[in-house]
Image (cartoon, rainbow, N blue to C red; front, top):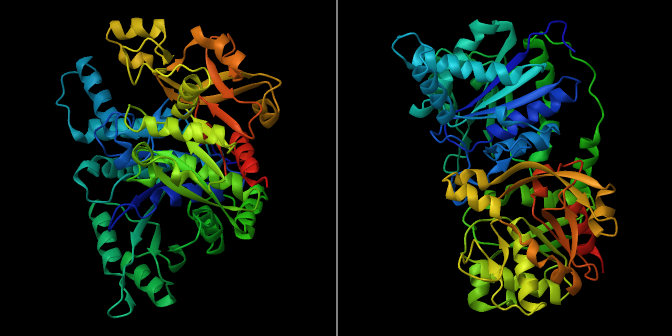
Length: 536
């Protein structure tokens, strides 16, 4: 696409407050540029000192998103993949812990030749190296900087991207800065002062923004845009209003309407090619045309933060929107089911049990799985949700009341879900991390299964994040009792999908299909679940 092989860089920063939508903005910019035929990649630089997102509390930080190559990342990578329709890699998720670790490793190996190791240039150089490495082969590389400008833990990232302008040339770098404009009810006015101060902070670090994204819950007028442009020293066309929208998937269209893609092409000296037609327009129209609401129960234990199951939520929406229906997700605390019973599961069109770790709330999930099976209510189990389905079937169909998972009771003799022998050896050698199955693994589908009909092919690849597996010692008993092992690893050693064929829809996967569901291409399992829920 480009005359030169030089990648163009777009750096997205934020100010005033966190959570103003840098991830959605970065993903939307990627969307509109990809629609012009450019190859686009996106990367997140996160200031946390963690090495990756794998150990972060989902109740506080939201879901851990997993890539094909097994990286445990921030949920923003889910937004990136859904908006640009691409499978990202571990290079797209960088935390400060990784950067420091690489610098320490280089220092221990003597690569700095006895020099004093400092933030500048050693830390900033390492950041630039990971950015340049991730950008290889792409026309445009978008980088979101986590946190807000001025945060102590993120200063090394700000300095690193400032230097990038010199390293690759100013004509190849564009800085976009997001700000928030509060509305004061008392005076009935939008205030631009916080945005002005945020830009001033960025200027203090040597970065002059080329684009200002202005988040405001009220409609901005020309006066507001002019004022921001004047104090930020940018063109008025570079001030992009980011009003409240019913669906974040409308953001790319809004950016197109204000001409942001054309402005970026002009600033980065790119040919502004004609906009391509793709499935995104049809998807957004389906969202607008959707009528009626279907209630789906999400039985889980991390309910303090809805982003804990972000990809599951979005995947459900995509599947129902494809059928021009809205979905209302009813959050159900599995511990409440344990205490009060299944009364709150009535009047639901379907039940979903998502992934999770630990023993807390699992008995309530088993009760929910039983309720769905016995009442012929569509059931979709994801990761732990599959293990719950297996345990419930063992207890109530095979009549093994003590059946459980080794995760919940390591001394139980009826572990229908367990750590496999080779995994136990790894644990004995204190290599516990090696027992986690992370990233994409192949799966072969049974041709008589519902899953095979939904996928339309015999072999698939799906992403995993779990440690325990179906216990192969009990395969014969389960299949004879009516549970179909619908998906197996190519060597038939691992059970990936279970189904109950005579049920309206009772499908549970050991993998996480939500990570590969896209707005314009809903995942087959979610589509099948939605269609079953919509049956009269």
